[in-house]
Amino acid sequence: MTDTSNDLHRSIEAAKSLRFDLARMLAGDERALTDTFDGDTTLDAEIRAAVLAIEEDEIFVAGIKAREAELKNRRLRFEKRIEATRGLIEQAMTVANWPKLEMDIGTVSVGKAAPRIEIDDESEIPTQFWKREDPTLDKSGLTRVLRERQKALENVLKIAVPEERARALGKLNEEMPPIPGCHIETGGVALTIRRA
Image (tube, rainbow, N blue to C red; front, top):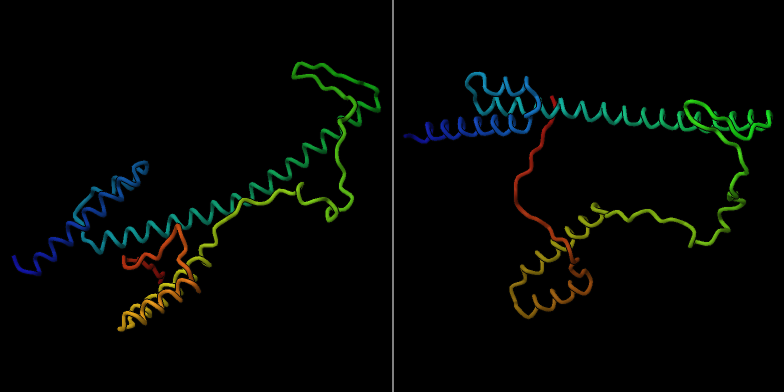
């Protein structure tokens, strides 16, 4: 077998593998599964189909995010409406001097409200009564510092004289110590998709 036929064979195997893996991932999508096993394939056709699938999924993600924002606003409107309706029922029952109303769907009672807090000036309230947000990792800042250290470390390792290299490494570790729990991963492959 020549190099060209080996390349063609690898390309066809990669196309079949990509098609099969996508089909497994889309197991709930009958149309995608049917399309997956119809006819021959080439790697460029399968990659093109995969890129189109990514674009379609990105459209769904954008639409769902917009819908989530819309639904959140709707939820807030309903919550305000519930609170206002409860207030109107309470007001009507108080005016009518009805402490209780039993109905087939439930019982409504009006009683003395539990004490509740009113805030006069938030800035005067001690910090112990404030909730702090859960900490989130600053990945961009961490990446920046790790990259700076990696670059400095590479420069130190280029020093030919062992004593000078050791001194430079000691200085680097003092000024820019290693960060536990993380490291820079080098190599690998990154896929970039640019839309036409």
